[in-house]
Length: 352
Image 1 (cartoon, rainbow, N blue to C red):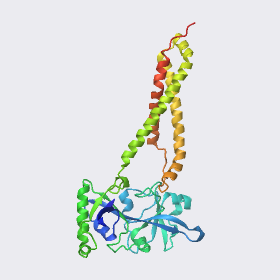
Image 2: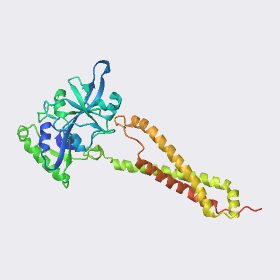
Image 3: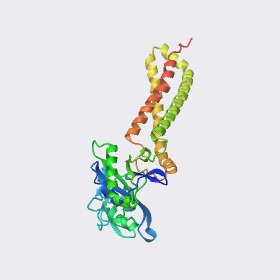
Image 4: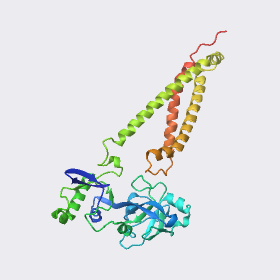
């Protein structure tokens, strides 16, 4: 994400916004393999009683290729579409494709009424794709075609029209790319600087797309939050293992006569320990399965309550999550069941 570091009311501030002429200059920087501009609007789609509010992003023609994403149907907006006076085309999200068009393959070529003009659908984005943000997006339009209709003065260097993103060239360091981009923009703004409309000390700052890792991040790092949550979860797991181990020890005391008889009849301690561990493993994996179901059913509710602006159109249980859950279930079973199983075989045989 391209940020500008500039003084504001005596204090320096950083903001991810850019004018279109500045973006065109930035796109010539050799440190970037690709650049793009994004501008978001809320638009009414349809007319009359059938109209609905939709989240729309106006993007330059390099946006989709920069992110390395492929359509599941049709094609994306490209450089040939993003020209002044170009054809009014649109890409719709997977969610809108399913809800408004029933997932029909014939959606390509359908039209959408956006009030100021009618746009033709040329492609469908893959499921879960939201661009560079986590919020839900319904439509993507060519920037230079749609932006002027919404007051975006794309020829005015003093008017910020959206956010710029870029992909660095291989082996290009961030400081070098920042220095080159700053020099390009300051040279292009010579006239504005001379007239006092632009600050000569402003510079370009590049940061990851994840806001919590950028220059505007809060003092609490998301890595620290993740570590705290992981530590608390581990503590809860250990407490649960200790409680289950106590229950298994109590159960072993009840089964003392049975274990003693089996030992007296010649059953090996290894076999008894193995059988007790199998019981504990079954208990752990049934509990893990129940927890997975609860997390899947509860994820949408918790997400909607805590992060209503984030789109959760992706499966909550994935192969990697299931693998970690299974590994933790195995570890918990060993922690909770091994000691009670060993202690249960150290009982003396019952006396006659």
